[in-house]
Length: 464
Ligand code: SF4
Image (cartoon, rainbow, N blue to C red; front, side):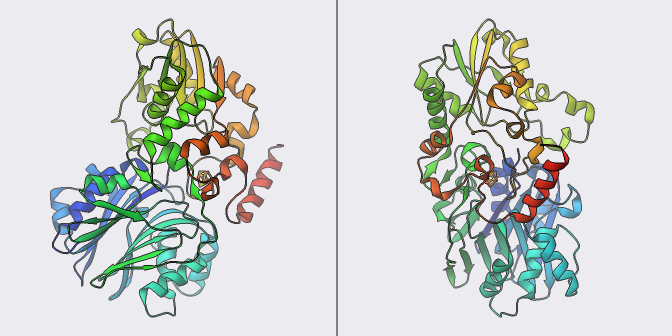
């Protein structure tokens, strides 16, 4: 399962905004590893530098030194829509002269095809990623005069989940979609401002967290300081997977430190699915904190059973089938001296297609584990995501096709327990109604009728 992008923006006259953005993107690398880019403006010239690869591969001293100005936006991309090609890197710059904007986007726009066709009919042309260009052209096509009104005009037309950073020659805008599915936070750095998908990006550049950008809000930062324009969100629907998996454990969202929420998920699993075992481990890195929580609650000693090779990036693995076939072996090395003859409780964040978990179980057994009891922080995922998470189609989701006992047999575990939805909400310790839980429940926070129709066709054609 992959998140679709990380975005950030810096407004800081007298600072090296490109370098601050570069380090913010470094901190957000986990949200997308396919491409990275920065756009800056000095008030009259808007420059974009974006390429395929990790942040450290894309930028050099030379490229950063050309990105001058007082305002910058940045983007890390994981492609969920549009292919993984250089033409789809972000930020994208659209428009002419003083009517030029640069935009970076995280999320998914459900009605993007419809808007694309409409804009094409009106004579707009597209060069790069459909979604950011559609949003940018919608803004530019607005009959309004003020940028905030033009952005609001576009927001009225967009259906879906999005967090955006937008830059004109004089303004930085941070925009969060009306349901707040994707996170976005605001901080201060020296005499300037910074916005980012996650608070860990603020920490790394020495910025102070101020607050979340609210669902439906447009934050405008310019010579006039910070101005906020709120937009009457009808309901909130923050993606619960930010807490389970996507966001870094040192990030704070809605006042809750992710590390603490994940520990609480592990404690919840120990309460819901106790088992006699010798050792507990979390699958690194996303289930490490939950492993700690399970061990605390159960009193079973915590160990590291798998060592993760942190330097294997998707970029290098994906194109080569032979390497891809090595699967988890490229990623994890089991500690057979620790595992040999032991009854293991193994905590993982989620089971999506069911392709990785059997490999993990086999790896542990081969390294000597006598029993493997899987405990999963996310409840069974039975419905696909339409809001920018690259998950799977419904027929690919193992929990849409099999019962929990069938999944236990399929992955080859001795027992399997999924945290309940109530247990998950208790662990996150925030009100249930602020979350999107659609991939567990099928209750989407906004209409996804078009996609649901496709889903019905797909389900009928496969006989399920
Ligand atoms: S459907 Fe699932 S993955 Fe997608 S936004 Fe909602 S909770 Fe997140």
